[in-house]
Length: 118
Image (cartoon, rainbow, N blue to C red):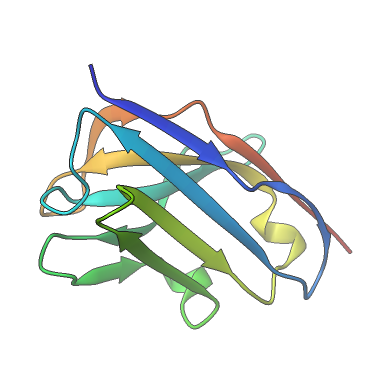
């Protein structure tokens, strides 16, 4: 069974940065499309960033130029670098497996809380 473990969340002031990491097991991030999702209070889970096996990426408009998704094939991890954080970025962030069209495949980690204070 695929296991995804997120880490790196926390409390940060607006304008600050955080780096989220997703450690994957029983799935190779090098050959699978992976994504970072978030669920803000009262909102549906949304795809924030995705990376495919060919290194092409997707970002939701609200995070473009601020967030960067990457992967480390040797460590089998996926990272989300988040800069210039805003209070609207406050959410639980989840690592997930996606298909080539950036659609979720319902394999998730437990999530990590990101809180951005104003």
